[in-house]
Amino acid sequence: MRVLLAGATGAIGRPLIAALTERGHQVLALARRPESHGPLRDLGAEPVTADVMDRDGLLRAVRGLRADAVLHEATALKGVGRKLTADDPTNALRDKGTAHLLAAAEVVGAHRFLTQSLITGYGYFDHGDRPVTEDDPFGVATGSYADPVLAGCRATEEQVFAADIEGIALRYGLFYGPNAFSDMFAGLMRKRTPVLPVGGGGYASWIHVADAANATVAALENGRGGAAYNIVDDEPITWRQFVDAVAAAHHTPRALALPTWLIRLTVPYLACLMSDTSIRVSSERARRELNWAPVHRSVPAGLGLVAR
Ligand SMILES: NC(=O)c1ccc[n+]([C@@H]2O[C@H](COP(=O)([O-])OP(=O)(O)OC[C@H]3O[C@@H](n4cnc5c(N)ncnc54)[C@H](OP(=O)(O)O)[C@@H]3O)[C@@H](O)[C@H]2O)c1
Image: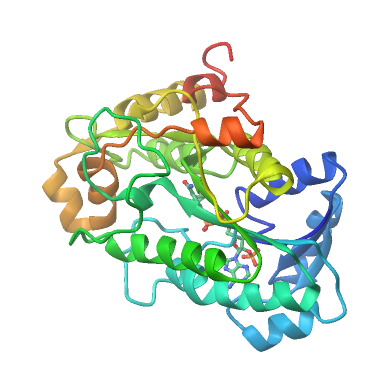
């Protein structure tokens, strides 16, 4: 297939181009900066300059192009420490950005649309030890500080399911691997920045970016229009287990911990994510319907600490 990929230069975008081209798909890669063009070409993609938030500019850029599918992987999560605001750029990309990309999909004649969603869309609270599935309530506000993130995930999913296109949502686990959270935490631990709540935090389900990329290609090829798929590995772990694995793999000092109340005061989103949330997610549907399974079954395996 020929695909138009938004977020092509990102942590998931780059391995995704590799996974798509390996399967014989052609990639039109959206990028805002011309300096990204060389690296995108090196990966085998054809760059297209456009800002997803500029609807008219985006539609001008894709006019005359043809694609079978649009993949929305654009986010703006850098500086996860900052406070969430009403006009948070990632939420805008999920809400308005999705609308703009759906319009672009019409221009290029695409019949499929895959969008990035997140397992935290199930809510920032303790889900217990039961595996959370796609049938659990999703994007329902709970009065948490992180409710805008739920609204963003809901906004992108609802739009792609409602549009006259085969819309698919990929509810990724937390990303680790090159350019993702593991690299980010390794950098912070090297600087002795405290990154952990006292007590070690709740459970989360993770996915190596290479496995997330392979799952996305599988969804492009085999996914059911109107479906959401959880994309996670086999072993949910606590934040303490995650940062310990990152420290061991990256040879950094061990993580320093702060009381949750202090994290909540300074970086409230992280308190929601690491202390308020405990979630173990099942990807059984993706394995069954997409014919996909992660190569890296756990974070320690994906970081090369134990055998796959
Ligand atoms: N499931 C997860 O855990 C999850 C999900 C997303 C991100 N993250 C993590 O969050 C961290 C930072 O992520 P990030 O979102 O800053 O970077 P990123 O995922 O590395 O890249 C974001 C991508 O979105 C594109 N983009 C952003 N705004 C755009 C716009 N207005 N128009 C077109 N494209 C746009 C960027 O393109 P340009 O080249 O044009 O900037 C880039 O390709 C990473 O560690 C990443 O792994 C985790």
